[in-house]
Image 1 (cartoon, helix red, strand yellow):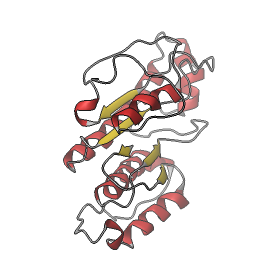
Image 2: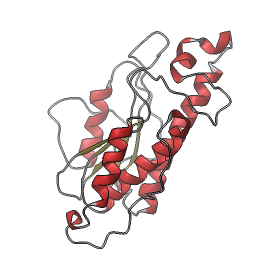
Image 3: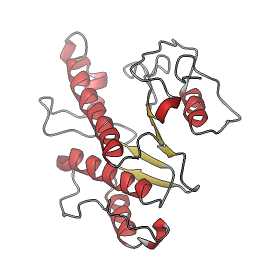
Image 4: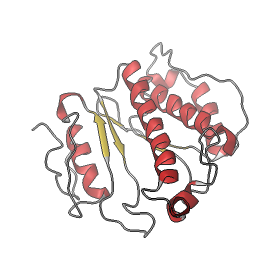
Length: 216
């Protein structure tokens, strides 16, 4: 997430690394002074809970709350959240499918068509992205923030890098809303950063414009 009205600063958050989660909470409790002396009331809930796979969704929402608070309080202008780890070796206990995410991708849902296990997990992860967007909206900073959701593969069962799904949200009037653009294999993860940066008034030295994303 890039907030185009804040000073340049960076913070990286991840979901399933207990040390980083603890550090993020502790770092946030130190400084309302880092918000430029503003009275900032966006601090996330500090209720303690176990940092295990069983609290995956709770950790993800807390990371989103920390990220939104950091943006709202002008502690940073750039945030990265990873829902899970790089090998997808996690499960989400509240879902019907109780295997890990990696197995849902490669196991083919026990031969069932359309990968129902993968679809269930992926829809839940997308709901966590939606939670981030709602929190930005509720904090009244969605229009000044560009949200980019991406992944590393299109067809993860074959480790294919084509047809990778991307999502852009926020950005005020700079980004077209409610639009789906089919690009095939012509664009990649670097290219999706191009319109995101352009919505923030920045021109990147790499990537290319994806048609149909920006309003101008």
